[in-house]
Image (cartoon, rainbow, N blue to C red; front, side, top):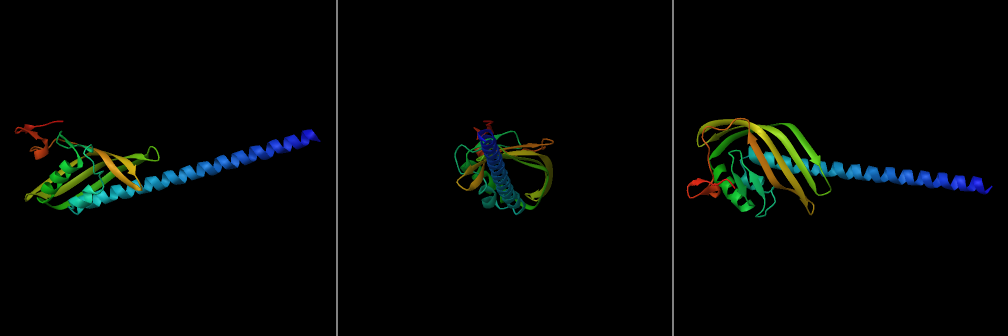
Length: 180
C-alpha cells in the first residue's frame, strides 16, 4: 500500500511540476512577444518620423542621454542625443518628399530590457532641391527604460558611399572630419 501511495504522490508531483514549467514557459513566450511588439512599434514610430520629415518624432525614439551613440552613413559618429537632435533638425529643414522602404526587418529581443532591430532600407528625398536616393543597412540597439523601448545605439551603412558627404557641425574638428 505504501508503495502505491508513494508512486501516486511521485506522479502527482511530477505532473504538477511539468504543468508549472509549461505555464512559466507560456508566460515567458507571451512576455517576449509583447516586448517584440513594443520594440516594433517604437521602430515604426522612427520610420514614420523619417517619412514625415519630423525630427521631433524621430528623436522621441532615441534615449535622451549624452552617451547615446550614432554611427552615421558617412563614416562619422555622433555622440549624444543633443548633438544628434541638433543635426537632425538642421538637416530636416532642407528635406522634403521623403520615401523610405524597409525590407528584411528583424526584431530580436535579447532579454527583458534589451533588443535589436536590423533591416535594409531604401530612401529617396529632395535635399536642398536635389533628388537623392540611397540604400543600405541599419542596426538599432534598444533598451527598455520603464515601460518605453528607446534606441541607445544606431549603426547605419550605405550600400555605396555617397559622392558628396555632408558632415554635421558636431562631427567637425577645426574644419576637419572628427571621426570619433
